[in-house]
Amino acid sequence: MLPLFRRHPSFALVPFATLALAACAAEGVSMDEASGAPGMPDDSDPNDLSLGDLSVNDLKADGVWGAATTCKAIPDLPGLSQPEIFISLEGLTLRLVDRATGFEKVFPIGAGALDTDESSTTYGESLSMFPQLAYGRQDFEIRPTGSGTTACKVWWTDPANGQRLPVFAGLPFLSWSGSYGIHGPIDNYRAANGGSLRRGFVSHGCIRMESADVLEVYARIRRSARIPVRVQREPERRADGSRVDVGSAWIGTECDADSDCNFAGGFCAHNAYSEGRGFCSQRCTRTCPDRAGAPTTFCVADPNDATQGLCTVKVTPVNAECRPYEHMVARSVGRFGQPSVRSTVCVPGTRGWVGSRCFANEECTNGATCAGASSDAPGLCTMACDRYCADAPGFPMTFCADDAGPGGSCSRRCTPASGASECAGGTACEERVASNNPARRAFVCVDR
View (cartoon, rainbow, N blue to C red):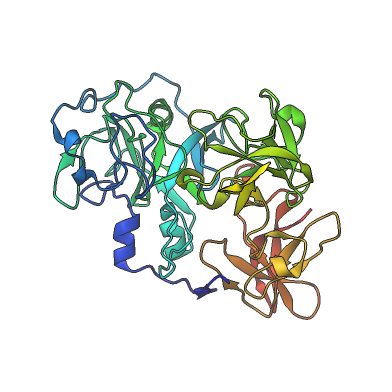
């Protein structure tokens, strides 16, 4: 069961101690940590910072910083006249758009690690989610000429011992909300190009980007007085339900058809919970190939045909709890053809809270029930309500929508924005009236 911790319309304020952990201030000692989440295996470049407390890595205090203290050149690119930024934490994307011209470009990011402390008010959330959790906000802004925003950020100060390290590598630092920033990748920060990105849940709150990407974003927005920034939890989806993403298809990538999985042996494995969508895979008898920069893979029994094996991804800190994959959940399973060898992997399933896909009431948690499911099509987890709905940590906020009858039903909130929303495949973000309170309205995810 998931613990409930807040109800609308009030929002629990996170204690200062949590803020100090999560935030990535534009200046001072509470800057983003210079590597990944504590406990992650160090599979990065051997010249990179170790994962965890920087102060234990004496080799990085040798004063030989390579190119880390050199300010990187800003590319000469056309500026955008009406730029906006959309960040998806679980989609691991930053989308830059220009309302005036229709320009759009999607970049990969590294987001805040997931909070695994069950006693915390931010349990289950990415540490990049603090502003929304605390204040019920998703909308912020960057002011390129304002405090904390610079085209050349170099030094980070370790709050534990005051040691200064040039982990920002002379790349731009864009401050948003006063406590968070968009900056370079941190990993291998002494490299001439500023380092390399580990895409996943790897920071203490800031948004990391590839060196070339953060330079491009800065070049395109630096002449604007203000840039709206919207942050959301789930992957963005366009009006046709397709996911906003970047990069070539690989095992675990969302797909609609086999042709979407354009790698050797690739096919689109069916996911019963995802309304016609699936995930890219390939057949296997014992082992699966891996790709540099992607989570490692594992051969499991096909959930649609147990006589065959298929490849899926293992769960690691960079794809924690299978969050980047819609309606995939972490399960410990045996290897296909060798069940004694087990691993925790991502397989089709549901997290079971309001707005999640389901086939039976037993799949829904905290008193929610499964509505609208049939033998071959999933429904949505919901619960009856009068005026308000409970919220659960690690899940989207909810809304008690009028059912045009006695009482209402809880739906997950959504935020339609510039051609995309965070609603799951097969659902749409539409406005609804509150139950027993026609003056209140909200956008929620509903079946198409």
